[in-house]
Length: 99
Image (cartoon, rainbow, N blue to C red; front, side, top):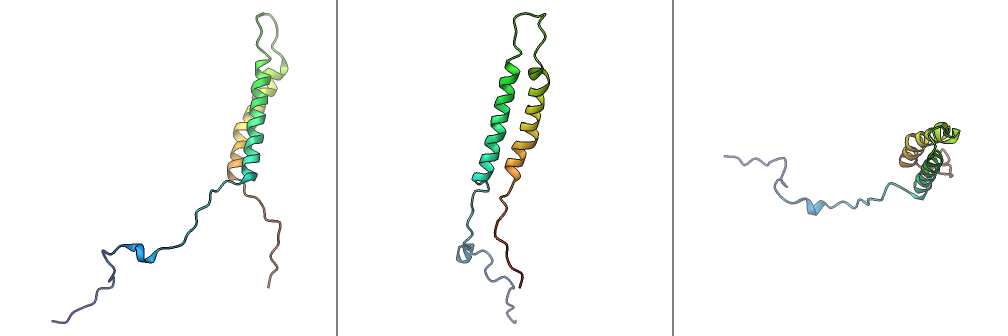
């Protein structure tokens, strides 16, 4: 009987001998944190504007900032700026010459 070599001689052995040097870095940079901070600031301003409409007199009209501007700022903060801050990548200023 002829012995046949298996295609996978390292079957069952640990893969520690083929250790790869892959470095993991956190995907968010200071640029991302600045944009997220701007979004949080806009959201805080919107909640502050919304709080100005609180009144004890039910006959008094709520101010325009609380009724119209604050919800728009909240929508922009939560749906535009925060997701952009999570997904944005800083553009590299250096151009690579072709050739």
